[in-house]
Image (cartoon, rainbow, N blue to C red):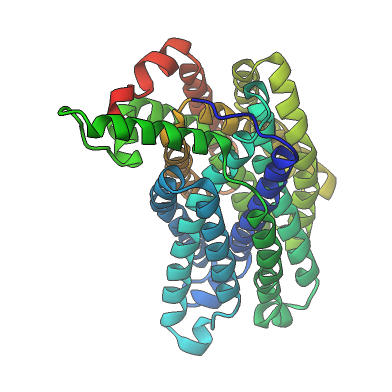
Length: 450
């Protein structure tokens, strides 16, 4: 059931809060990814040098992805039962606090074995926080939209936080990578993490200014009326938790939603995490060059996101997503040909080609998938879909790419095939998800299961 349309400034305020909040959350996540690719191997896993050190550092990056489904389940339950707003405030505080603690963490040289242990523990908490963040931000923006036809566009502001967070993280690392190696390894890498404390205060104030989702409030009233009616009936059935309703009532919907999210997640970490390690270790580029390239590409994605959402609202979400996923199957071949040329211009063009189509897909997929789930389990449904996709495909993609690059040195075609497989999986999933009969009849839960 759809709530009353949001009035006044709340739609704009909710979209702004979704953008700023996700920008902060993803800034925190991206600075970890960048540090994992550049310095964590040396600082926290010094006995594992070269390839194995990088693999160990990226392994801690993957650990965060494995924790994200737990965050999706926990905060999805809070968001569906207690409120979207409360869930989002908690995740923001968790994420910001953990990021600052990582910036203060002693290295292996100071406390030995405990340094990587504490890093992994903090990374797990960070993953749990991100697991609850994304779904709530998408819903707070989309569910405040004036009408349903604009939901995907408003939800795209949560997606806009991803490139914005990456831009901010790249700018921060660009400032500190100009230091000499000793200064960078000693204290320079910590600056981006500690800066998160400032962002945390700003995001907290903005999120408190947004009202609760009108869809959620309307659904709470419906559930209260049903509970009242059931209390007078001898045939009342216990209410299932949102996660149980998703897993038992719509498992195929969940799996297709997982697959539909793969390109936006795994593809993104392919271009923005793995490519840092690939270009610095296997192409021989200076770390500043690839960071400059990713900064330019992130700015491009920032502007692509609202434009893609607008175009999709005109031509149809399914048609748009299908076209972007199909094009993404072929983009890695152009990307690697250009990246291997080694210049800043060629690398930027190569990665930019892949991110252009992938970023457009990412802008629209959140609002599209969220409409597949009923309001009462929507937070849990889209959070679990996104976070399971991240755990299975996102965290493992940089690791698999690193293994392929090591075993096929001088050959990029296995890496290109990996990216094509990611794109093909999302294309098939989104087309199946777009079948109206499947989405509305086979997958959505029956009212009596509520």
